[in-house]
Structure formats: C-alpha cells, structure tokens
Image (cartoon, rainbow, N blue to C red):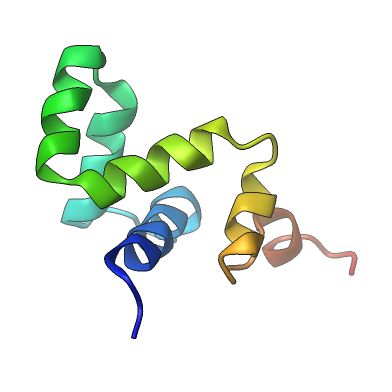
Amino acid sequence: MKSHFDIAVERLHYWQYGDEPTNFTSQLFSLMQKADKENFAKLADAFPEEANALLLWRASSDPDAFFEAHGLPAYRKKFSSTP
C-alpha cells in the first residue's frame, strides 16, 4: 500500500509533467509554489504531505532524479528521442 507521501509525489509529478494538470491537487501545488511564507505555512498545515513533497522536490539538485528515486519517469527520459 502506498503512503500518503508517495501519492503526493505522484501527484506532484503529474502537476509538473502531466498533459492537463488541472485537478485540485495540481492547483494546490501551483498555489504552494506561489505562496509567501505565511500562506505556505497555512497550506502546509492543511496538506502536510503535499507540502513536504514539494519542498523536497524544490530542494533537490536534480528534479528528474527526485522523481526517479520515487519510481517515476524523468521528464528527460519521457520526452527524449534518445535512450
């Protein structure tokens, strides 16, 4: 069974690379990305796993490697014509 954090990372991946990321969680990630510290803290209180996933992804030195470490395809591999 997947943890809530694993699901949040999958949704973060969809928000970043999905065809039409317009669902609630995608909108939530967009709001978190734009929020100042105070408002981010409020959103993080309500959605801690999503906030943690976003913070870890933003802090990673390689966003694609972050997703690969969680078993998700990297953007460069998903859309690259070279292997």
